[in-house]
Image 1 (spheres, rainbow, N blue to C red):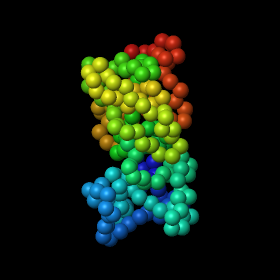
Image 2: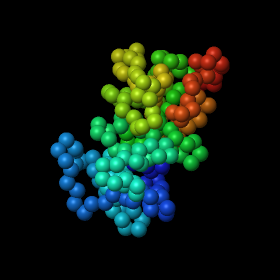
Image 3: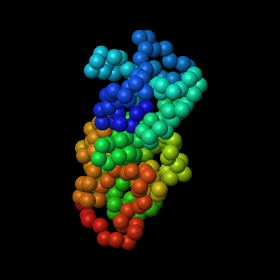
Image 4: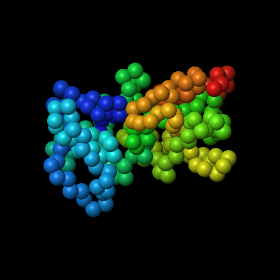
Amino acid sequence: MFTKDTADLESCQGDCLTNWPVFSADRLIVADGLDAADFGVHVRADGTKQVTYRGWPLYYFVKDKPGDRLGEGIGGVWFLIKQPFYSIAIGTDGKLGNYLTDSQGRTLYYYDMDTPGTSVCDGTCLANWPAFHADAATAPAGLNPDDFGEITRADGTKQTTFKGYPLYYFIKDEGRGDLYGQGVGNVWYAIDPAKFDGTTAAKGRKGSTS
């Protein structure tokens, strides 16, 4: 999977396709334990039919021989499709760089007023920024599984955390690659997992309210 495909399913072009040929199959027969409904086909602009898994276009890596996994983690944007599949994935934006998403490529945000282990987003806030929860946090190579956890909210529901901070969706993000919540109220942000070091609230500085 190619993380830049969050925004554009055909973001791999030219030399990229030379190094990462698309996977296509006229008739797809899946092994026991896989759900055929997870697979689909994306027809590229040149007419090539590319198999998808849970919406992610699939590729080979030109340097792989059978059994090799040399493409894993290259550039921080190429990752193996694994089973069980990632409950948390990575998207890539031309301006923001890498950011956390759910398994379908929907953006995950943090609230700059939260502190570790605590969500202060309730009521109307929570209606606009629904809590994200995954029963098990499975993530691509390069992300530390120990960075993910969960909290129990006041209503008893669970919410997944990253480095202790609750993760949210934005209600106006309708599909993969949407980033409409980025910067809203100067307190809502997508998370670059390599750079995120906590919220201003946790660092004792005053933040804006939304």
